[in-house]
Image 1: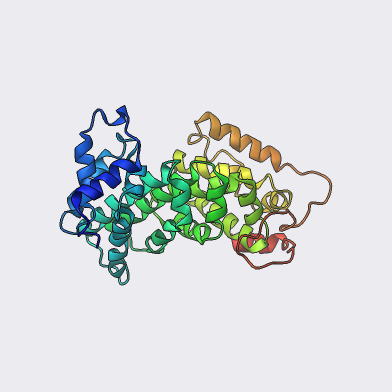
Image 2: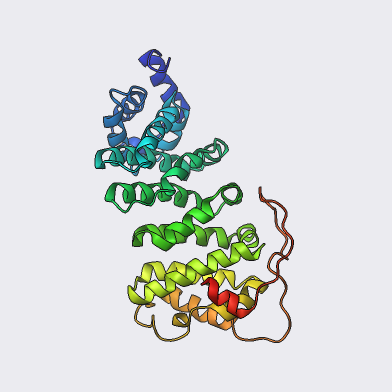
Length: 330
């Protein structure tokens, strides 16, 4: 049915789905429309994916054009699903990776646009990317696939919208990001840590992670491992996001109490003095250490903050274990 729809009708669908303006003045509008139409046919899709992915930065209206045109999103999802057999067992080729990443780049475009973002979430399209984030192969095609998939999620959280955080907290994005933060490439670690940072900066996200000790300890353990690794192979860009995550965790009273016991020593001494040259990074670290200064009084319990449960079973408030348990976890 997708391929039998008359070309003229599909073109009208593309054109009517988005108001025209001068935004396409540097790009041949008719070519954009034609490439979108060509996505519907497997015979012409690969070239269309390539050309449209190149133009996504210079055509501000591309996202609604893609979303509202007949069969386009289905075609992009088909490209993603077609790759599933190649990831388990892992035998993804560079050509396959490049092709599906072009499709992912167009989905990132849709995720970034305010007119299409909500519908993108309501259709649960990010869930189609999670099998790619589950992969562990270190080959370049898989690394490129994971990084591009993370880019789609990163584009969502970059908007700082509550709807995005609420959606992500109903999914497994946090453990997926934590796994990549522990064992991915530096760039993938950076994007995954940025996603976690954005979730933590939202009040609902912070409450969710600090709701039980299991969630908090998993995050703290991975961040601690990253600090130890960064002490050996320093990266200012990655360290900046790690410090920001720690700082945000310290806003939670009970997490702050736990961090007083388990914050890595490398963040307390001069290990990263030459690495933290960015003003924000230095200020964040200073504020973190100030927040963790010993104070009188008894803190609350992880899980005591109110917040929506968002698909997780109800759990009782769980007190933090003694210091030796915390150190053992990290």
